[in-house]
Amino acid sequence: MESNETHLIGLIKSGNKQAFDEVFLKHFKSLHAYAFTIIREKDDAEEIVQNVFVRIWTKRDQLKEDGFFKSFLYRSVHNESLNYLKHQKVRSNFNIHYADTVKNDTGNLNTEIVATELEKNIHLAISELPEKCRNVFQLSRFDQMKYQEIADALNISIKTVENQMGKALKILRLKVVDFLILIFILLK
Amino acid sequence: MDKNYTNINDDLLAKYLLGEATMPESEEVEAWASSNPDHHKRLEDFRKILDNSKLQIDHSIDEHQALDRLNIRLQHEKKSINYKFVLRWAAVIAIIFSAGLFCYNNLVGNKLSVNSGGNTVTQVLPDGSTAILNKQSSISFVGGFFNKTRAVKLKGEAFFKVSADKSKPFIISINDVQVTVVGTAFNVRGDKKGTIVIVESGIVKVNNQKDSVRLTAGEKVEVSQNQVHLTKSENQGKLYNYYYTNELICDATPLTELVTVLNEKFKSNIVIVNPSLKTLPISTTFKNESLKEILNVITETFKIKVDYGQNVIKLK
Image 1 (cartoon, each protein chain N blue to C red):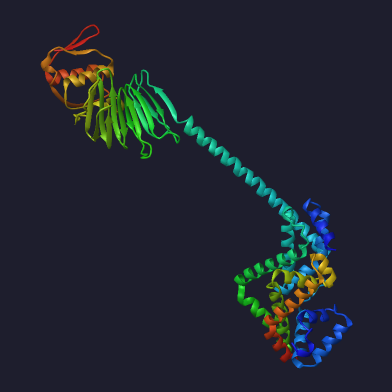
Image 2 (cartoon, helix red, strand yellow):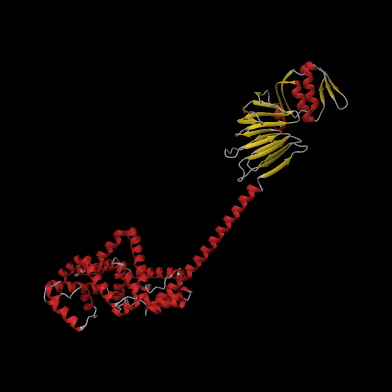
C-alpha cells in the first residue's frame, strides 16, 4: 500500500499530474475531516487541504519518497489549520466564541459543547505526541489501518506498533483526563 | 496495575480495543477490567479517546468536485508564478542595465577634453562642476567612481565653479602647480611667465613641488616658473573675471594691468610709452564698450593722448 504510494510520489516528482490527482482523491476526505476537527469550518477546511496540495504541486521537486508521505500530509494540514486559526483569532476572537454559544442553544447544550471540545482537545493532544508515536497513532485512527499494515508502511515491527499505541493512549489520557471526568458526570 | 494481572499493560489494552488481541488476551483484559472499577475506568477512557480520535468523514463532500476546484486554483497559481518569473527576469535585466550604465558613466562618461579655440567656452563637467574657459585654453577632466580624485589638466585660463564632493578632491594641474579645491569659486591663469590663482569664494590650496599655501576669498598667489616659495597676497579688483562676466571691473587698478587685459580681450597691441603712466590707478567699470570707447574714457580720465599707429596703439 505505502510502497505504491512511494511510487506515486516518484511520478509526481517527475511532473505526472495524473499521479497527483490520484493521491489527492485518495486522501482528500480524511484530510478534510482532519482539518475540520481543528477548525470546525467545512469550506475553510477544504481550502486548507487545497493550500497543502497546491504547495505540494508547485514544490513537487522537494517531495521525499520515504514512506512517511501520509504523516507529512497530516502534519501539513495540521500546521495550515493552526495558521488559519491564528488569523481567524486576530480577525474576530469574539465572533467565533459568540456564534458557537448561540448555535448550541438547545437542551443538551452542555453535552454537545463538551463532546466537541473533547474531540478538539484529543486532536490537539495527538498533534503534540512524539513524532514516531504520532505517525503510528494517526495511521491507526485516521486511516483505520491494522497493526500489520502500519508496521509494513513505516517499516517497523508489530511489537513497536503495539508499544507506540500503548504509549500514545497513556499520554493522551493524561492530557484529556479532566474532560473525560466532565463527560462522565454529564452522561450519568 | 495489579499483582494478579502482571502482563496487563497499556499496549495490551490498546490491542484489545482495536481488535488486534488474541482470544486469551481478550479474556484476560475483560477479567482485569471487571475486577476493579479503576481498571474499568481506565479501559473506558482509552475507548473514549480512540472513538473520539477517529476522523468523522463527511460523505456529503465529493472529492472529484474538490479536485476540480483545486485544478482551477492551480491554473491561477501557474499564472501568478509566470508573472513572478517575468518580474524576476525584468529585475535582473534592470540591475544589469543600471550596472552597465553606472560603469559607462564612470569609466567612459567621466572623461572629457575641451579646447576653447577662439571663443570663451562654458563647459559643464561630468561631476556637475562648471568650467569657463578663456580663449585659446584647454582642459581635460578625469573623474568618476573608479578614480579617487577629479583630475583636471589646464592650459591657458579658466574659471571654475566646483561642485562639492569631499571624498573626491578637485585637483587642477597647470604648469608645475597643483590647485586642490575644497569647494569654491576661483580663477587660475598660467602662461610662460608663471601662474596666477585668484580666489573668489571658499578656500583653495595651491602647491608646487616644495611649498603650499591656502588661499581664502579675495586672496591670490602668483607663481613664476621655477619659483620655490609661494607667497599669497591680497587681490586688487576683479579685473581677472572680465572673460566670464563680460565686465572690466577696475578698482584702483594700475593702468598697465588694464592694458594687458585689453590687449587680450581685443587682440590689440597697446603700448604705454611713458613709464610714469603705468602706475596710474583707475576705478571704473566697462560693459560691452568697444576698444575705442574705452580708450576714450582712459584718455579723458588721465588727460593723456592716444596714437593709433599701424598694428600698435600708443598711450602717451
